[in-house]
Image 1 (cartoon, rainbow, N blue to C red):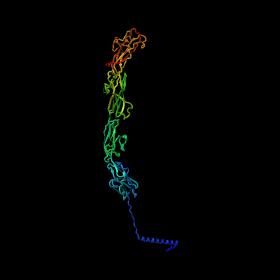
Image 2: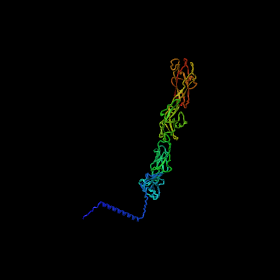
Image 3: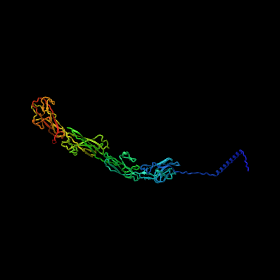
Image 4: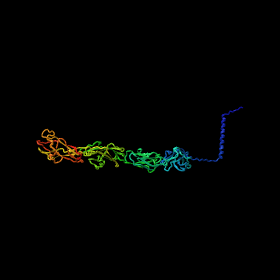
Length: 569
């Protein structure tokens, strides 16, 4: 077969195309005219529906309210959510107790049963929040459902079902209720070193939480502790199911008195209890205890040597301990008492029994510096000074009371008039003090050859200045001389020409001749018993022998005190 292709020129093609285009336009025009002549107008309409908001984040509790972190009554549970609305409507967050909500045209929705909370109108895409305060009447666990609803004026709509969140921040919210605190007491009073116990009647029956007791020195607790910190706490208990108690170990040294103690119950989440005893002052009393005297001494344990004609400072010491402290005014009075042992403390324990011979009562004692510095110190050293008179009864050998000793007792009296006294375990002697004072000179007057003091009329007076009865030993220099004591010439008057007697009006011839040898005379001066002792006189005279040259003769006699016989005291 053969095919023939006829060649057509370009010009003829253009004419052909133009002819086709013309007839097409003509056809279209005629067709439209026919259609317009046959059609009527038809209107259109569509209803665009309102879409409910859609949750994009949440809902959740912030902060989380769970079994481990419940919301205390009086505190808020806050819910938050983020939602968008395709119609750009504002939306509401509403939290309901059941999975049922009702939208409200132009306003906030409502829960069908219980509304936990509802937010204000919130812009699409922004976070909405609402809060509810936990109440005492709430259940422990409270189921919730979160909805987002718009407030369309005509077709308000809500998310189709409630959203309960997830995890601890999701449903339910948990309410922590206050424990009940209905009784508190302690077992005081107690002594220092003992233990005081606080007991309570308290429980958290609503939540079945454990509870603990805090006993504070000042008011106020927070975060499960006394506001003043550890130093503000008398004691605290562990968490227990009910009726917690705690103990305070009283220091061994502490001032007596009443101490404030404020009781608080908190649950395991540190929520304060309710009840009349919350924060009540259940004070406790620490008893006064008597002071204790120890380590009593007198004169350092050595014999006492008195000082003639005056007093001798004798030191008494002791240690006084008081478990209410030795500091401040706790021990206002410490007395010392010094006495002869047969007199005994019972015969010398009052000021009215004072006698300088054998009893020195109620001597004020003072604290030795630095031995008691604060109220945690129990013991202080005390010293007292007994000013013992020179005539106090001696107790050494050869005296009226040589089977006695001198003792002392120290008595401490605290600020509550409790007292204790202790006598020294071993007494000391007061030694005999054999001493006197005597007239300093004898002037026989003007006498001629053969003249004498007849009767003996010159006296010396002996005054005891010690604590024993006295006799005396008398002696004289060998001679009285005009150049005494050299006595190198002249006509000395021998010592025997002097005579003495212990009685007045003694004739010269009856007197006792003085010698150079000390000779005891039974002067029998009694032991002093007051500061105005009994004195004794000795009468003296002299005879001027023949051949004595005229002149002023001098000499020296010696009188020595001698302890007298006891029967003569």
